[in-house]
Image (cartoon, rainbow, N blue to C red; front, side, top):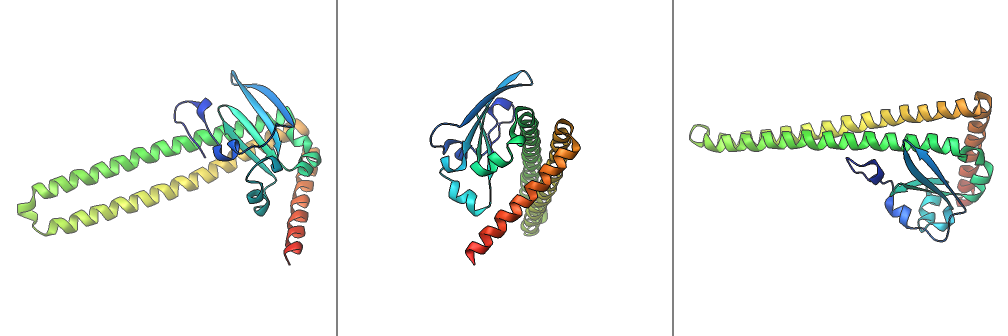
Length: 214
């Protein structure tokens, strides 16, 4: 996941996949979102150099972003079967989900760097103090330096762990918001039917691949 702390138009998502494209998009569109013009391009998965990797992961659709352009790589049969999910209004809902996820991720990284910098600075200052008090502490200062370094590592570990947990929970909430918007647009009955068909389709493909490998 690429990031730029200050400029939303510089957000990136899977830039290597974005650039690994062959041929022209089979569909293009432009939307106005928050006073900004965004372009979306649809390509088939086979037009991407990483198509074999996606196939191994049972990945039928991949969203990428670079320079305010969204490139969607999608399985042809999957797109034809679930094209209702890729009409402009729903694409806008999903783009908002992507942007809000990236904003959350960027904010999380900024806080992480700030807290880790403060923790490291605190550690360095204590090391300096310990050496200044060398006469009083003697060899005990080495133990204190090690203990403070250990505390810094523990602090960093728990900070990253808690932030990752927060990000996962936040993404779940944002995705639920996307689903709610989609349901409001399509209607509850249609949405539930599509989600059921989508689940059955993924199970069918998964079983098919499993049988082929046996």
